[in-house]
Image 1 (cartoon, helix red, strand yellow):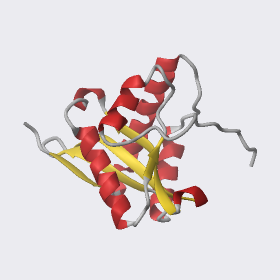
Image 2 (image 1 turned 180 degrees about the vertical axis):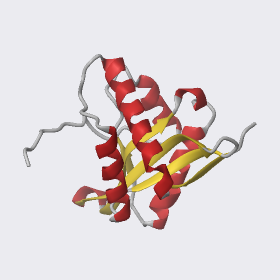
Image 3 (image 1 turned 135 degrees about the vertical axis):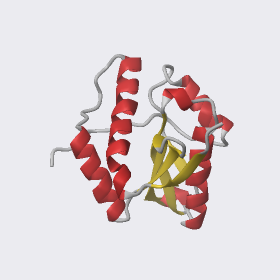
Length: 161
């Protein structure tokens, strides 16, 4: 079996990360049959690099060592709320390429995120799943890894900047 290592992103990997973000967004839009994201690979690559370098965003990669292929990632950022008793982490993206699913890669990425959150002394980690019922399997995955449903649906409103 090939060896998979989980590690923080490094500059040579921003391109591969941005490609996987595109894969994740395409998978969500295909499944729900609706175009809900605007994706530009180069903008995504530049945004990821800037956020990580500013220390506002952390990305951990799953790398298959024999081929040096990036096969998954998890990203986290620090959030604040009075209800959470201080700072907490939010996972905006977790993705494992289809060929590597059901091989504990996602679980290992979540473990890395929770271990990182403990180092940062966050009170909790929060995550939002893609739309249900289409992504019921994603919800089941998070619940199997200790996450609990804690509220309603995620809502948004676009802001013009």
